Structure formats: structure tokens, C-alpha cells
Amino acid sequence: MFTGIIAGTGKIVGRKAVGGGVALEIEAGFTLSDPQEGESIAVSGVCLTAYSIRGNRFAADVSPETLSRTKLGLLASGDEVNLERAVRLADRLGGHLVSGHIDCLARVTGRDKLGDYTIFTFDLPGEQERYVIEKGSVAIDGVSLTVNSCGGGRFTVSIIPHTLRETTLERLRPGDQVNIEVDIIGKYVEKLLFHGGADGKGRAKTAIDATFLSEHGFF
Image 1 (cartoon, rainbow, N blue to C red):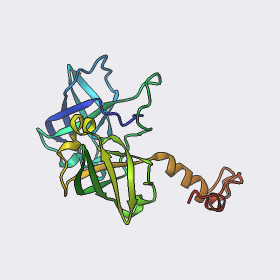
Image 2: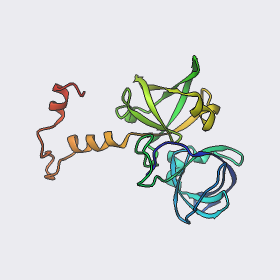
Image 3: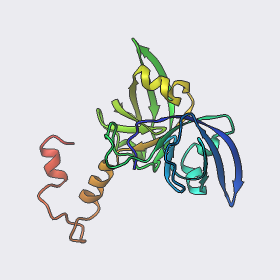
């Protein structure tokens, strides 16, 4: 589990095809203190298993499934990535709960300045749009961000100078693709309300249902 608070960036320094997938070698731009072989590291939002950790370098395998759902398959040696190590239970949860399991790719359709802030607009596949809500959370290339506005298959976020400077978001331009992980809590709520409750017969054992939420202004 991650928080979407990026520890720093790194670079792809090696890439080779392995068993239908890809093995990446990544060099972090910061020290990997107390490294553990097999630990989880989020690479631009994708949870990968790190091995062969040497100093600030590590290797990670990317499966065919992950290549099909994320932009990791588009990366080449020299490309930068956002890096975050798995959260510890004693850490501050500064962003939101991020699993590192990418839901879809989105495309940058706008980049505008508003004072010191940068406003990005993204196109979002229709099947994921319902999980993105105004003032809710979304992870973009692993970065925890707050949704400014959404609708019509698009959403916007406002990036502060620090986040722009410390992550790969600064390099994004219209037309670029990003990894998107929507807030997992919304998907669990939807599953419980609309796809069968605790009794296993399609009924939730609670007075809270879609009608209740709609009547009280949640929809």
C-alpha cells in the first residue's frame, strides 16, 4: 500500500524482454535505505517487486498484464519515473490510500498556468469516469492529487510548484499518457450497493442503499 506522496524520481537505466514481459533496471535519485529484497516499490504509480537491489539501483519485472494496462511498456532507457516505497504503519498518511494497481491510462488534453499553479486537464475512459468526483482523490503516475472539476469524460487537477518540481508531472504536455488509479473506496462502495450484499443474494444487510444515498444528496 502507498500514499501517493512521491519520495523522488528515478531513471530507467536498463530494459529487456523476459518471458513475454519486461525486466526493468531503475536507478533512484535518492538513497534506498534499509533495502529489502522483494519489497514493493511504486514506479509511476505501478506497484512492482524490487529485487537485485544494489545501492540506489534495483530491478523489477513487469508482467504482460501490467504492460497492457499501464504506460510502463512505453518507457525506454533514460526515461524518468516517479518512485514511492511502500508505506509503513507508523508513517503519516499524507496523500490517500493507493494500491499501486492501475485502472486505466488517461491523456493530457490541457496544461494552463493560474498564477503559480499549473492546471492539467485529462481525458478519462468512460468506464472509470464515475469513480472520479470533485474534491475527491486520484493518483496520476503515482502522485496523489485532488480533483478540481470533472464531467464529460474529463477532469482537472491543480499542481502546486513543489509537486511539479519534485515529480515527472513537470514534463507532461498535451498528448502525453499517464497512469490513473481511482480512489479504491468508491469501487468498494459500488460493489456492496449494486452487486450483492453480505447475505450473498444481491441484497445488502443495511438500510443504506442507492435510494437512501440519493435522497440524502450523495448522488
